Length: 347
Image (cartoon, rainbow, N blue to C red; front, side):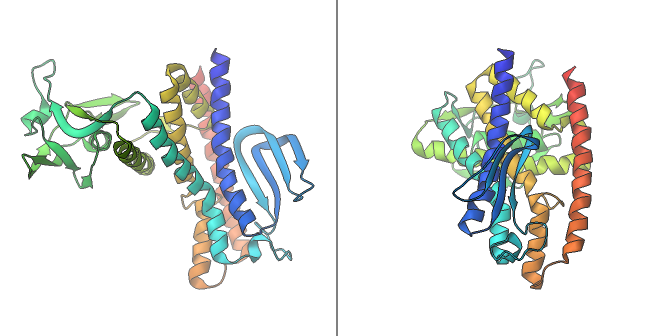
């Protein structure tokens, strides 16, 4: 059974790469760009054939750590009128962001579907119970929170569901926080609300000490909860990146393909909901990370294109090549470090 879970995890990771590259591919085809190869995986080819219909090579490669859509004029000048470099800058921008956008859009739609078909309840943002801990204390009650309060803001962030409130408290609740609640139809502001904390992977998080009411699973509520949970997930990914840079999260919390496959396999063992939920989170993570303004990522190329759009002339090709090469080398070094870390944690 363990092999089946690992295989399922690899297939899921491969599918996320596939839909990312499909985003680039279909938008490039829409604009008539000359495509040389569509590949899933990196390294030596396992399967490869050239289509007689469009002369594009379709490949499956050995290492399931990425993929690419190779286009004429993508990294060098080309006399081909349909080369990437010869297309209007707005078309090149759309092609560049299409992969990440596809991951994010698919993630949002899948989140709504998962919430709709799962047996899990929809958590409202209205307090149902404030239980006492083992010491006979409830921190948030002591700070002024009451049953039937509806939490509408955590610090400066507006929340619409219990899941949103949970994430904000987990992230910010290591310090006293500010809550806005609706109580008996009136807005009440609670300053310096304290919550208990817990530690995971050497990182401290806030912990809720209340229970909320469930909401009826109507079409509208499913759409609402799916949309806002997807928004919280994207926000979590962005904030995790900043927290990693600031030192709140350690390198232990960063995973590469091996670590991701391991976590997907573990999620598959615990049930379909956890597995597909993690796949959705990883899909949105791929989208967000690929848009980071770092050379060799889609976000790095996007920065060059935006500069070209504003300045009305491209950055010299050699300069762009050197920057991208430097970024690629740094990215590969980081990937090796993460892979080594993931392999060590396997044992």
